[in-house]
Length: 212
Image (tube, rainbow, N blue to C red; front, side, top):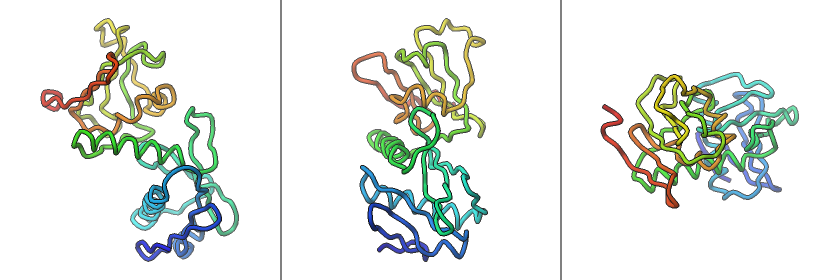
């Protein structure tokens, strides 16, 4: 048993669950444990506890909650529990558990750590600027600019981009995430970072000029 902000976190019978949230939202959270490390499930549970205590929201059945760069849902399992489900990796509905959501966040954190950067997670409803060829899986040249709140800051172009800015498309982050799962791990790199995937080894570097 782990205690966090006055809430107990318990592991039992293939699940991790809370004990004590009921007095705040009249439900407890429960998550099916699959392939991820126990510490990673604890990190998610703590995130959800913070969400409840700090934002003090009224959680409703089937409510979506952004877990950094992925989306989970509070499925009403019973009068006692909200079971945490996640968006499927291809965007085709929700599935039980949170393994993919955890995987996305952990890989983004690892990528940032490798470059000595603090993660700045994009969220589902932010926008990304892309050119033709991104959805089709072509190699990309990308940069993240300081941007308004509704924008992630990422601009992704391929060899199909002809330099005409009017040909670029502004799409939701999640559409790129569903179509290009190979790129998701880079999207928490902060403003100023660039990415080029045209070689065998993907190049990542910080460009001071991109934040001027």
